[in-house]
Amino acid sequence: MKVLVTGGTGYIGSHTVVELLESGHEVVIVDNFSNSDSSVLDKISMITDKEFTFYEGDVCDKKFLEDVFSKEKINAVIHFAGYKAVGESVEKPLMYYQNNLGSTLALLEVMEANNVYNFVFSSSATVYGKPSTLPIKEDFPLSATNPYGYTKLMIEQILKDLSKSNDKWNIVLLRYFNPIGAHESGLIGEQPNGIPNNIMPYIMRVATGQYDKVHVFGNDYDTKDGTGVRDYIHVVDLANGHIKAIEYLIENGGLSIFNLGTGNGYSVLELIENVKKVNNVEVPYVIEDRRPGDIAACYADPSLANEKLGWKAERGIEEMCKDAYNFASKK
Figure 1: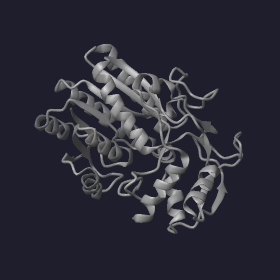
Figure 2: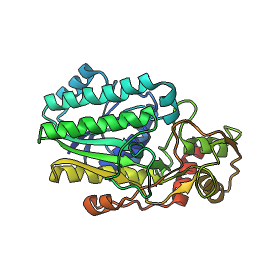
Figure 3: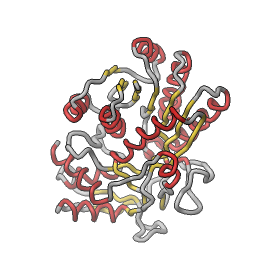
């Protein structure tokens, strides 16, 4: 199958491209390097020793997308492209709504015009807002606490409406929890441009001596040690969830929704302690005020993905911390 991957040089996108190629699929990558680096393309080639096609451009640009679809016989699309930082979305909501919604609408319109109806969307656990109970199941009420979360929620609604309007569409919404880690080769991993917005690359910059200390936002949450608890999932496990989703939607029409998480919650301080222990490094930290839009705890019930997709996270927190440091220390 020929799969178009938007945002395919990004963190999750690049790992998914690797797993797609290793699974025998043809891959077409579209990216504009807004939060990634062109060197990732060479690294994907080094890891897989397989060929793929790349187009540099913005997914918001319909003419660019039309050109890609006219040149490539696409069978399915995995849509990663989008801005993803919670804090930045609170500061720059218009930028987030314009980019995340605009790119998705342009992509769906071009897909429909080219009779391509197989679509996997990179959604997020942020669509559950502040859950009243844990673990989180797919049928929980949906809400959001920040503009980034609202863009995911709005796109999910667009896709639900699209599915109802035309039964040709086969759509899978994958609600990720918190991906960390890196490919075992150490060649690709999370490498955001500028100051990291996610916790693990920030910890890694402290662990490798680039930054002095980790800023931990809030230690007064109702959690085991007062810091935020999240369901951290190895990025390779997450990538494999997309392979399962592509295979699933070919056999199952309509719209399906799956959580991709481990079902286990770890606090920020537990994450820091695991990084220190596994890699024998120091990670100084300082407690700051809570960030707007953050919640106390969030972890998945991943049983539906296990049952329907035949998917389960296989890598534990220590492997996530080891692989993340292996990547960070090689850069």
